[in-house]
Length: 200
Ligand SMILES: Cc1cc2nc3c(=O)[nH]c(=O)nc-3n(C[C@H](O)[C@H](O)[C@H](O)COP(=O)(O)O)c2cc1C
Image (cartoon, rainbow, N blue to C red; front, top):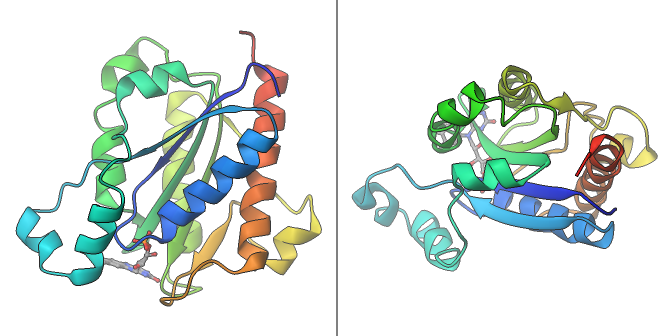
């Protein structure tokens, strides 16, 4: 889709949301979008990150991924955010990035962009839907146009039936095929609708 500049912003402690972001990026590029994948800056103290092997390994694996900046948000005309569920809402690293965007928000530079969200949690009923809502509420403050998947494709049912966005119950295993299909569908749908509202 011409004219779609999709910014995929993720935070990931252990790799799940990073894998979700990369899956979405591949589908969005195949749909014709220009895509940037960026990570939220780590805010946990270095000692805490290094104190967990899996956390440190993920930080090392993604050391070369650029950190999200306000300029990325201005560049894009579509947003896909992916962050782990933390006590039922998005991880605070994602929130810390969002909280830098006040000046852009005040200038209306986050408005009128298509936006969608994904998450993972340990438990199917551990707050996945409320986490998506925590991101969508922020998108509404931006003035974004929400593009949830709804029940517009059979892949949504196959991946757990969440109409708000793709969610994955992360129990140590990688993404399954049904989740990957759901992510790809959500990304293509976002690109499609971003293309419809893009002016330049
Ligand atoms: C501080 C903390 C809070 C969490 N809160 C929840 C929760 O409320 N519900 C849940 O099901 N999982 C919870 N989890 C599990 C994470 O959601 C899970 O580790 C995450 O989805 C993995 O994503 P990642 O691999 O991208 O880091 C929590 C994990 C941490 C470290």
